[in-house]
Length: 442
Image (tube, rainbow, N blue to C red; front, side, top):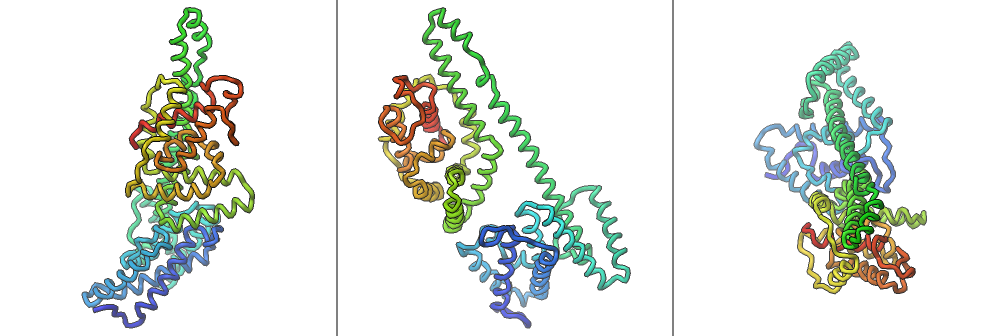
């Protein structure tokens, strides 16, 4: 039957929804320029009023089958709108169903999508109280006392349990404050769980960094073994200690709180269409260039590398924890690196398309600045850049150049200059994770 509403056309409603989407984007905390969006209680009230408008428009259809065609036509138009690559994925599920609870949609963006700074939280609570007081003033003579009585009932119910938020369409009877408080408590509960996980990770990371392998004073044992004329055992012991020191160091990097935050951020950024995250990094690169910040470029490169492994994070950690000492010396491992360099490349699978997009962007960003890769965690580079990538071949070529002591614009150790074998130097630390990660199935 098509759209059938006596007071507003479908085109007019869609134009208003587009304005509502702009408000939701600002509610996520940032303007299109990347600057923080400032929200006071008055503007928050206006956002909720927008939500109430859509609730009333769609609620006016009622339950009659005569309006089924209208809802279908609206959903078809919304599907076309939300499929645009420029629309953030967080709004991709916008439909007539959640527009009937539009104030809940607004509340989600206000509470769950950005840090709740003091000023923002204060403005949200003030707007919530004002909304309830205005609604009560229309039906209650002593509306202030009526509001206090509702708060007492709310306090009693919260002592019993932290219930999930009731559907927003019932808020006219119970008061909007109830739903805001429940959503705040749900967020507090999630943050408490996250804090507990972070505390556990800190303990685990600290334990790995200060494990017996890294603190073990083996000098006395090595001297004893030398006196007993056991050079093979000494070599194995030193190699094992060095291997486990590197292993602890790199696992600590992956379990570090900052790295976990990078993983979370990268997962969110790269779940968006390429056109969107390219724009984000384009603005970041402009800011970095304007400030001439080498730190900014390094952090951007690190985020891109982390973005290549977010889907393999769990298996990567499990593999790194389980991998055992390989008794091959650095020269033997170097020759394996050569085999990787001249080995057969494979084309990326469909599941690896997102990684390929990130690597393509990273290659363009690096350009002639390959030394930036040497500022990253060795294991991060080894696992993030697949052997099929030209960038990986450039990285391994540089390893070859430095191993042979040839001229290089980069210098990570002075072993070749001092006529020493690469053993526990920085170059050796670059070689072992390449071989180690090549044996993993991620």
